[in-house]
Length: 449
Ligand code: ADP
Image (tube, rainbow, N blue to C red):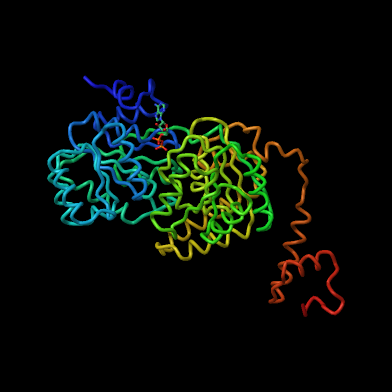
C-alpha cells in the first residue's frame, strides 16, 4: 500500500520529507481542515499533491494565477500524475471537453481560479464529482489583512463549505502574519495549523540608501557585471522602469530580458523560458513575474524600488536561493518610492477604508524597514512574529559606523517644519536646509520665502 514516504520516493525521487510536510499530509489524511504555512521554496506543492494522491477522489486546487496554474499542471504531468486546468485561457469547446473528461474521472487534480466557483453551472458540475480534497493555494489572498486580498477568494469560502461532498480542506500560504493566520483559521474553520519558520538563513540581506535614478542604474550594471556567471532577478515597480533598466543593461552588453503585464503572452512566455533555461543572465520584471517560478539557482535579487509590504518583499526575495545556497538580495531604498506604492493603494481595486488603512500601515512598516538599524533579517522575522539572533552578515550587521545620537538635529528639523507650517506656508527641502543652516537668502525673510 502506498504511504506518503513511498510516494515521495516514487514520484519525486526524494528520500526524506522536509520540516512540516509530513505533518500537513497526516493532518489532511486524518480529516482535519488544515492550514500549512511554509516559506517560499519550503515545499508546499508536494504536501497537497501527496495528500491528494492518497485520497480516493479528485483534488480541486484553487489558485490565483493562470501562469501559476499552468506551471503546476505541467509539473504534475511531468511526474506522470494526471492533472488539468479549467481556465479562461481555454476556448469554451476545450473547457467543455475537459469537463467531460473530469467527470469521467480522467484527472486526479483539477486547477481553477477562484472566480470559477461563482459560476452556477460550474458549481453544480462540481457538486456531482467525486471530490476528496479542496486545496486553497496562496491562501493569504483570503484575508483582508493579507498583502494580496482578492474578493473572489473570500467568496470561494462559502462555496467550498456548502459542497455536498464535504471534501477535506487544505489551505497553503508562504507568508502569514499572526493576523492573517487568524483570519484564515476563522474563515475556513481550520482545525490544525502547521507552520514552519519563515527564516531563510541563506539569504544575505543588503540595502543601499539614497541612490538617484541614474546611480541605481549604475549600481545594477556594476552588480550584474560582477556576478557575470550567476542568474538574478531585478524587480522594479513600474513597467516603464522595467523597460528603462532592460534597455540600459542590453546597451551595455548584458543578456537581460524584460517581463511585465504589458507584454504579449508570447513575449512573456519567451522571457520566462529564457530565464528558466539559463538563456538569459538576468530578468528585469515587475511583480507580475515570479509566482510559481520554480528556479532553484537564482543567486541574487535586486529591488530597484521598495515593494509596498514586507510580506511582498520577503516573498520576492524568497525566489533567490531555493537550492539552499547563499544568495544576496539588495534593496535600493529611496523614500520617494513610497509615493509609487501610495499611488498603487489609491488606485487599487479594493477601495474599502479598512483595506486602505491596512495597506498604508503595511507600507509604513516597509518604510521603517528602510530606516532600521537592526539586523535586517531579524527585523523581518520579528515582523512575522519570530525572534532570531542577528544574522551577522546583512548591511546593518556589517555596518561598523558607531551609533550617533541625532536627537538634537531631528528636533531642530521638526521645529523648523512646525514653524513654517504654523505660518501657513510650505517650504522646499532646500529652503528648510537654508533655515537650519541660517543661510536663508538676504532678501528672503522668514515670512516671504
Ligand atoms: P513552495 O510551493 O513552498 O514555494 P515547492 O513546492 O515549489 O515550494 O518546492 C520547492 C522545491 O523544493 C522544489 O524544487 C521541490 O521539488 C523541492 N522539494 C520539495 N520537497 C522536497 C523534499 N522533501 N526533498 C527535497 N526537495 C524537495
